[in-house]
Image 1: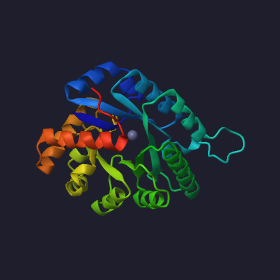
Image 2 (image 1 turned 90 degrees about the vertical axis):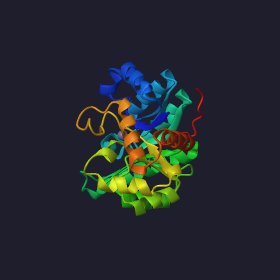
Image 3 (image 1 turned 30 degrees about the vertical axis):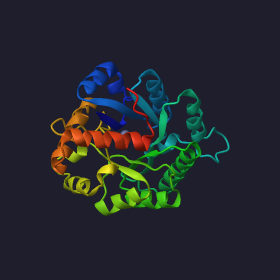
Length: 267
Ligand SMILES: [Zn+2]
């Protein structure tokens, strides 16, 4: 039993061969997926997939890097993007999170854009709280600001720190705010020493796994398209690192995923 808590089955490369990828993942023990949107179109697609496949759940929202197309609430001329996101809820009961949302300063030096990202983030948090949902957080080169913003604008239901890349001290802070820490392919990379150290400090009841497929394939597939079945490699790697029985780790982290996403295990 593995729950992939962050995957883009709605991305072209996975969509093109979806049934094949899902079948292969299933034979590797992966039986639930949170399909995450990054803009309005991909969020709609995530909802469609969740409605079509029993094992798929959807997260909807706009990633900070898509700030250009995002219409803030107080805009006079156009329909606010957050209202269009909210509208998707009438189409499905399998939208279990708002995401991926957050702050991304990786290629961003412009303060105005950073400010817009913060406003986008807050609008999504407000929606999550209105709908009583957790969030999936994308934070790149922005962990301190992300933490500060979440302290000022708490998410009632908490959420998942997707592809967590910070220190163990900061992970503790996110955990205090009700967050689970997600580990993906990066954990298996030779040069990701910190990630490995961080994993060892996270309480077992706060660890979840993800692929972020089709991105960030684990070793030995690094650089290739990340396939949904490869999450098995990451979980196996983590079980060795933590010196925990693989089956036990799968069981615990699967339960963690159900818990934070409020998903019932009905198979
Ligand atoms: Zn993602």
